[in-house]
Amino acid sequence: MEYTKDMIFGIRYDEVHNTLKTEKVKWTSRFAKLIKKHKIITMAIFSAIIFIGIDIVLLTNFFNILTAV
Image 1 (cartoon, rainbow, N blue to C red):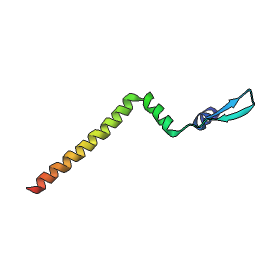
Image 2: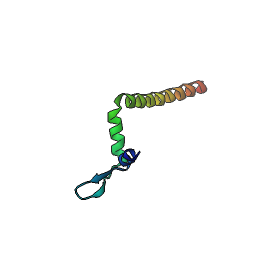
Image 3: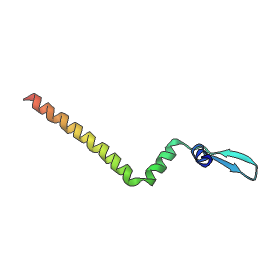
């Protein structure tokens, strides 16, 4: 549990100076690392979102054509 907490907060122990070092880890770099690690799942999610968006646009256009007649 301590190791996981250190990974999340980016804390390392410096044995030479006997101090704790904190690394500034931005959430965007974690997000980028997650995307690079899970490329297939990320592509599947992004393509599903794009296809859902296209489907919504096509359905609204279809209903607009039906109501115009």
